[in-house]
Length: 585
Image (cartoon, rainbow, N blue to C red; front, top):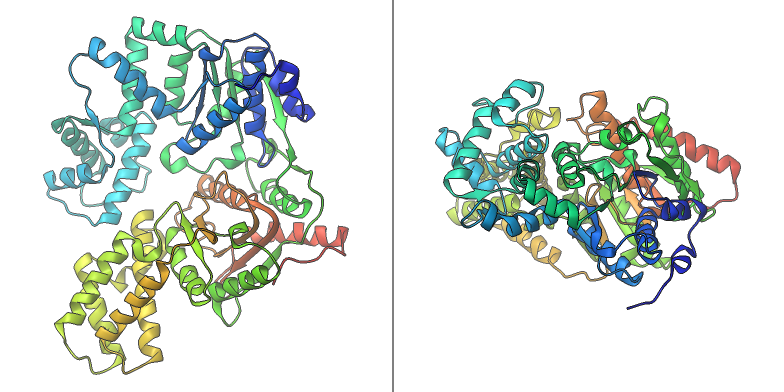
């Protein structure tokens, strides 16, 4: 094990990070902007507490929200000579405690944790005599997750959530929720939210279990605290008991998971709830150039954003770089433009692995994947399947293949498309659903599924318009070839990701695409609260860029309202440094 002392741990930290690391025990809140080294600050705080002899490593629990983040914390802590610290997600820590206490506190075998809610939701709908497609089932599962993260029972949901847009209209959602819980109970299963609920109940109702945990872990460090849900906060409070040794770090401007129950209210109210709390701010941005930081600040500090008064104003430490570019689509369409620019960047020496294309919804990847494949540019999709690997697209391809095998010879290109659309009706897809999809009447997963299949139909339309003699057999063969072409493995390729999947990552060059009204902000964002979250999501995307930032939109549609704030920042950067070269165009 590496031998370090407390002075070694503090070397290389900036003044604010050092202050965080050295802060005395007690409640500590750190508001850390994007790229400011928050993980460095909290891992060095943990290491300092241990190496200074203030806290035994075995008494510290470091909590975060993803397995990847917990793994990164553990690796950094080992490198700092403190391998004894537990670095876990909330769910992992809770599940470990349930497995430990269940046999002697509850008795019998612990219920199995279902890996997915889909089968339970399907069975619950069957109990109610209702059917739904896979996308709607996904939306229902998401709404149940939100309700349980808000610590709501089915009855409480019916009473308190009447303003929610239910993903199903045939029956009240509270009944669906209750049927889901009954089905889960009948199968002897629990879901991921139950893991937290049961661990909380154990801590609140079993004094001996609570005492054992509270004696074992006396000091808690919580990363990404802006993403904590009411349920997770309740469990954290139960774990703490009477202890006040709690350090939290987060950025309210990066709260982007409210659909899953995350809320920055606990970060914002921390100093009120812990009046003796020490408060710190990390503002030195080590990731991005001053031009990218200027755009991020402009978006974040816009007066129309309600969170502007408490936002962390970033200060770039990297110096200048290319001016960010705002780019309406040209004759080749937005996807074609992006592919061309990536080719130019590659020819100029930028590695494909240093480039990312980020978008709001999974369905947007279809046209980008096709454009990159046609340009022979390797790519990988992060956080989701490639377009032709999606379950809904596989189902659609199966139905088109069935229509091709039926052997009906269509007399025109319109008739070929009619045959394809008719085949897709078997999976509940119809062109008539476009208005519902565009207006937000469909749930998010249902809208993404509809748009993905619509992209497949659009590709079929392009094929028959290019070759009017093409039959359904020919269309299927061409689409199948595209699917096979898209399957090439790309160890080193452009990263395609939604803005949510890009959280916590960074690239030299970032293309932010689809910056149109209806996509950014999303059509579902009807309230100011939801629009603010869309603004935060765009901020997350912008702050993934180290130097080159290209923002584009479909010129045939209204562009995003957020671009006005960005334009002002780019103009100011250009005036301040007229010699700065633009990003590749």
